[in-house]
Length: 164
Image (tube, rainbow, N blue to C red; front, side):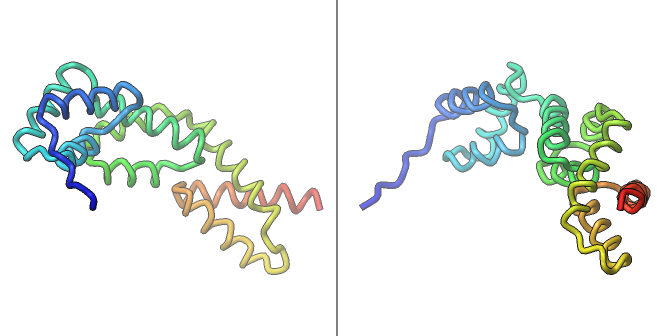
């Protein structure tokens, strides 16, 4: 028989959350959920959260900047998808905008072209309209803006058509 877990005291929850925040960036929304899951009521969770923020363990601006950097560099996500994910985590719009401002425009465009070039190799080129639509869906599903995606798809398909 499995014993139900004992709820943590606010001090124990603070220590556990501080250790978690020391290992990796965490959003205040994620930590609040964990605190409540650990058995704290909402007022205790708010107090612990304020303590964590006061001591610098949690900073949503720092979290947003790290999230943007990681998702762009490692996952190849565009601004639309990153923005959506940060909103889901309860990050304020001004902090999201600050994080997104760190992305260099030339790197952003180059990353999309790299992703599209890799995708182009696996697309069936028999029907140019279907190939173009497939490339656009891919770029938009990665979170890149539609006008930029259209421009880059045109560039990639033109370059590859010249090579053929």
